Image (cartoon, rainbow, N blue to C red):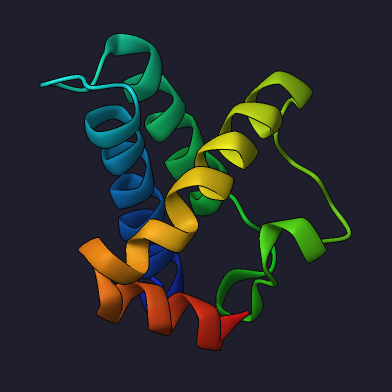
Length: 99
């Protein structure tokens, strides 16, 4: 049975990457580079040893992202995070409450 928290985190990170690509970069479709980043983030979430008790990634004692991928996702989250309140307010509020 999949972990609901992990699945929710996957949806949020996917939505943030989509927003970043469409609104920030003006892409009509997500490029291969950002698809790979999304898949990488999903694999990292699937392998999270904390499971349902997973802390926010920036507060996690184990940084499982490669440094280059960590910087990319950090940049995306920094830009997309505040905009999630406009484009997906339910997911944004739920994400904030789970921090």
